[in-house]
Length: 540
Image (cartoon, rainbow, N blue to C red; front, side, top):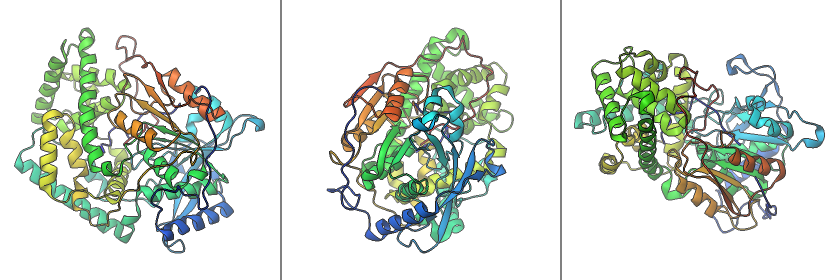
């Protein structure tokens, strides 16, 4: 799924009335009535968790490369590369923590956070303790972040030279020619070959199921009998797998902007659905810009705004801004506006200024950040490996061409760029898994909280409804008529109150509740030159 927005922003947030009983554990901790994992991997996870519980985590000063303040401590957790062979090769996951700031009587253990991706790290998560909307939670919980396998310093994956990953300028045609398609097919083959060559036999072990198993080992290493977890975006899929595999190990679990968990959606169909949803969110953005024509001068109708965008795209194809911002970089920057509406003012301003002859705001927002090339390449490698390994993908280009050509007629904004991102999966050499059927029955799992924005493009709202249906007893909180991706801890106080009630007191509505949307951005009251947010956002 598209990866724009991985490197920016912030997330998270809280509830109300009654919640219900704890899960009834089964003999083996697995949910009856569903497919159990292979016995060897199940045993291997139990062995690794037992070892981790005995070893714990030796937290100390964080390495310099983590760029974390002294208030945050860091450590590592050892996990098997292959859970079927727990005595074989192991890897170490990096972990960060800040201790709860409240009194001992307030302490409720650790809260582990995953921001999504695949390929994102939450090593920064303890910094949330200083944010106003997180302070009550930070009094009650140790905030724990980690880098999943393959990410950052956790047995990092790489598929190509970092400088090749951020090459610019690039093109982004909505109706690609046959010659352009052949170029992208060749690039996808080369990228898949690079992953296989650089990672070798280890490549097959970077999967969502192993991410869920790693999470259980992390739980044990932190000394927790049951896990309190918040996952955003792709992090919700890790959480859904965990809840299915280990329902008796769950204390409280928050799913913020949920991936559709149906096995037939993982991952090819989810990507097609996502591209369609981005078209609607792109329309939302253009309608907002048109309502503020007095501020931006980009047109008084969504169609006029679209025309100005296409005008900029054509100009950049002929003469890239700053020599590095072409149509591909423009597209990536404006895809961010599909994720987060607090990007709407700076993106619209940059487009307006560019068309008036001032390139600087657009270059500042859209140019590749060379200093972050290594991290960006690593994140993309993990994203690709996990999605390609997780499930079967079409292996015939004719299928991709047919499906995306048809979809692009209805949703031209993001369809082909999303296809190119995922096309290496057509030529993947590592074995593919069959996705686990996400599902629990009544009484197996404590009530969990699902947060969803009704117009979210990155994880369309249907996914949240389906997850609530599959995890029996789940509570769905909907921010109506809003589309920001990752709503917990954001600007909506109603959403945040549900999140806080749930995590602090175990309280939630019986089944579902709704919140009015947070206010749209106001171009008059916002400083258009304000810097970008510095904490990462959830990403899928």
